[in-house]
Length: 64
Image 1 (cartoon, rainbow, N blue to C red):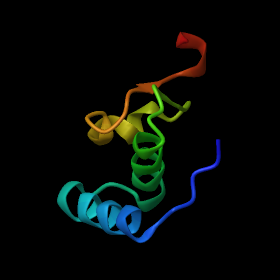
Image 2 (cartoon, helix red, strand yellow; image 1 turned 120 degrees about the vertical axis):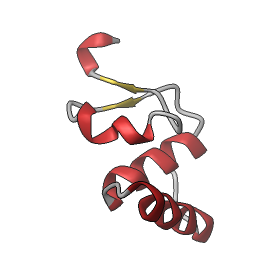
Image 3 (cartoon, rainbow, N blue to C red; image 1 turned 180 degrees about the vertical axis):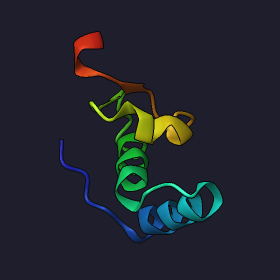
């Protein structure tokens, strides 16, 4: 499934970054994954998503 970013995604991403001091790319991925109703965001970089766990479940590939 392809998700195309929209203005609302950009606005929400920037709001979250300002509040939580998270990275732009990680935050954008979490926002888009949530909008896509993904069950998980799969990454090997779990630590960078700790502050975004309320948006989407984060998992290592080997844990699925």
